[in-house]
Image (cartoon, rainbow, N blue to C red):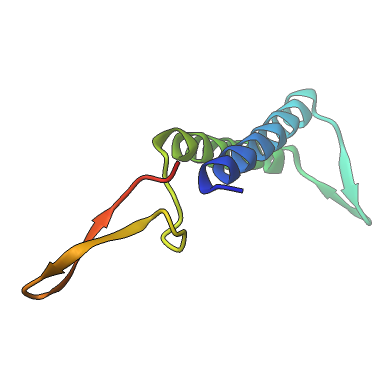
Length: 92
């Protein structure tokens, strides 16, 4: 899986979580974990955080950001006086 596909998949997952948290908060549905009740404001906060992560994932997938550890990321274009000259490429 390429870094672009991974970013897109993560963004979709975070977008789904954001929508579900937003729906729970808007409906005011009660959630209990054991004997403790989770307040509605926690779902509002979770929807904002998940929404921001989804936005970051979608923007990363559109910009073609790739991992610094992938083979497509670094291409050596030759030697300079001070050592290696590195040219950075976008991932496919």
